[in-house]
Image 1: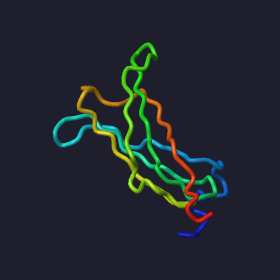
Image 2: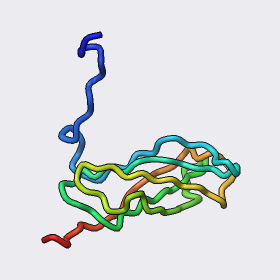
Image 3: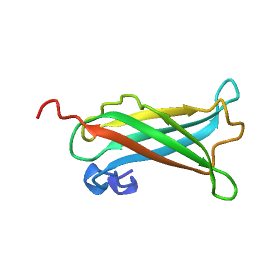
Amino acid sequence: MGIEHFPEIETFQKLPRKVIVKGGSSGFDAKGKPELRGIVINNIGHLIRDTVVSLVIFDEQEMPILNKSVAPNPSSIPQGEIGSFTFVLSDYDREITNYYLYASWKYDDSNW
């Protein structure tokens, strides 16, 4: 099989210059609690720290019904690196389907 049969590999140069949050698999953990896993990609150009990922869940009428936050692992992410996160919701009983994810962070200016 030649190289032309492989899909194009996404490079960081093609990604927007921001902190990107992507939700991955949604399901239930071993205890039957809804969970959502995902990644955080730092493409801002600098080391970031104190990263927090927030999850907002919406109902059928697009009204927010739940807001949770979690720190990804690691919470200090160098340029071009990826952190992962998992939300396990004990106060929600359905699969997480209609949601919005966003990240907050600070520049790591300790070496400036």
